[in-house]
Every structure is written in structure tokens, then in C-alpha cells.
Length: 321
Image (tube, rainbow, N blue to C red):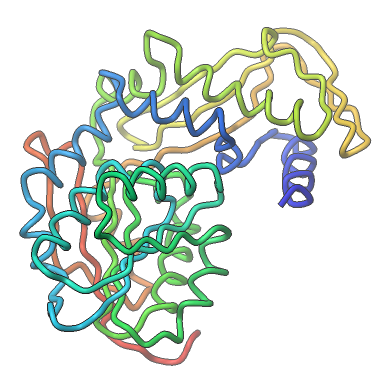
């Protein structure tokens, strides 16, 4: 994975509009910082989705149309600390469903911590962690022929442009069989006074989370970024419905990265694009789903309509396009 990290960093910093993939936020320190972010007052996303799981877990399970006598695989992409998923795992176990829980994550640290905590909190749950790329793991599970429920929570889809999101969901579907389900969490479009503070909290945790990406490049790729010379900048307009995060250079500077063997120049005010966080409505999501073999079969929202969890069902299993 280090080779791909080097390639992605070099490619991103060599473009006219510099960028770094948001997936590299998540090393050990990044994992810890994001857990802090999720508990911040400004970060409504986790709280809103947790409300859905707290109040509607029975209806969510019913929407899966599962048979208690039939074993199934519960697969989660980017499980993180599993705070919301625990509600689902406990309810499924208490109601007598037969399943294995398979969290997939690129962070081995996150998987290790999740497995340890679930062993303590929910020892009856069969946990089979899967470390690596989503699609590599899904491809390996594709031929098990057991019913599958795929979880993609926390509005992680929003980190992708719409065309990429559409392709991503299509590729999820092609690894599922007819009637398999996806439970996907999406952040709804809201005004800037609600959205922007979620990406620029008063305690500065989100700032530290973004700057940690440069710290990781320093540590793992032998770079000499001075974190004090970059500023975290979030942007959002309700009309566009996309929150964007940048790291802005505070002066003219050069950064050397030993792993790439190159020197990268930054002008004062130049920005590195690190993340997008797309906000949705039904129309936008319908458009994203249009090229896929998945349809919306249920939708659950929190009391403020800030967040939605959609249940998608694969409606046909035709040959891959």
C-alpha cells in the first residue's frame, strides 16, 4: 500500500490544482482524531444517523427481508469504530438471526480496535475482519452464494464526485446477487450555517485531522512539510451542495518528498484539495443510481431530516457491463 501512497501523493501534488486523496487521512492518529470529530457538537452527521439507528432499528432490519433460519453475511465498508453498527449487531443477535459480521477497512488499526471492543461488548457476534481494498475483498466474497447485506454508513459516499459515486455503487451491486441489500447513509442538503461548522469546529480537531495528512506524508514518505505554514480551509454553498476541504499555503515555499525524489513548489494562498463531502436529496441520489441495478426499497430519516439511510436492493443479476 505504501507504493500506491507514493504514486497518489506525487500525482496529486503534480497537478495544476493540487490534491491529496482523503482516504489517506486514516492512519492511527487520523483514526483517533476522526473518533473525536464524531463526538463534536458541530458534527451533526454521526448524531443524526445514530438517532435513526436508536429509534428505527427494528424497521431497518425488517426492510432487509431476511429469514431468521437462513445464514447471511453482514459486510461493512469502512467500519471505523462501529458505534452505529453495534445497535444493528445487538438487535440481529437478540432476535436470533444467523450471520457473520465482516467489517472491511484499509486501516488495520481500526479493525483491530473494533474486533477487540466487539469481543468485550458483544461476544456472541461472529466477527471476521477483512483488511484491504473494498472491491478486492468483495470480489473474494462474491461466490459465497449466501445472502448479503452491505453497510456503507456515515455518508462516506459523499467523499466522491457524483460520476465516481455512480460507478462505485454500480461496482458494489455487481458483487451482489439479486435481492441482496445495501444500507447506505447520506447527508442531506442543508444551509451553510449548519454544514460549515461540522468541518471547522471551534476546538480545531478538524483542522488537526486535515493537517495530519501532511504529518503522515512527512513520517511515511520522508517529506519536510511545515504544518505551521498551512491553514485548513472549508468551503460550502447550499446551491452546489458540496462541502470542500483545502489546505492553504500561507507563504511561497518548497517541500521535498524523499520517497518521490521530487521538490514541490507552493505559492502563497495556493490550496491543496483534500476532501469533498457531497450533500444529497432524493433527486440527486436517483440520478446517481440510474445506471446501476439497484433500486431504493426503503428510506429512514432523523427527526430534523438532516440525514437519511437508504436501503437499496439489487433487482436483477444480469451479466456485468
